[in-house]
Image (cartoon, rainbow, N blue to C red; front, side):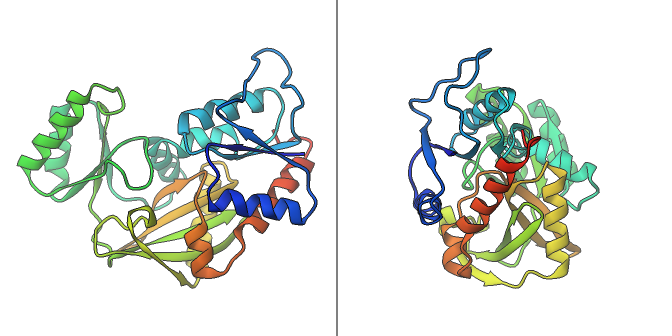
Length: 283
């Protein structure tokens, strides 16, 4: 039995459900609005494996942690969610593995952040440590903008907004690269193109197929390994000095990827999920 932890049913979840039905694999939708986790007691009627499709990082992280603690294997594992759901931990893991990443500085106060920005040089990008779909990103072009944005973030009050994740602005060619890695295979990649500096398809970026070169394949597989592996999307930037690993998503959307490439992502994912379920030490 495959459990699928869901927030809402999107194109991706429908594709996964259809693949499971076509293959006659029993599955259960685990609605996060109703699911309960009895800490210290066995998870009732536990599936053989759970595929996480939640859109809420906090819910994903705690659900996967509790499932893994109860001996239920998950895709992805809680450790992977913890790293990939936090941009600081992701960049640190990638850098520790020797992978090329954008110049990044983390600061804990407004004054320290401003000093780091001035030292890095304008423009820079200020990102929330947790977030997706290109939300709450700020491209900062001068000191006045830096002072305003830093003050706004500090005033918001959340501890996350009081931790400043500062990255160099990479002058990419109006696009970035998104590859999908499933297990130890880079199954494909797309360009995400836009006139805007944020190229996420959630922000009207246009997806188009591209060739997975040996360099891209190796870089993406190493990046996936650095954060613990599984079913992941890897975002690359084309820097004048070479490719950089920018971010990794542990519950990637893939409808735009499928439209652009024709690759049936759901089939690859279900292959991997059933493989994990069959491993006695998968959790």
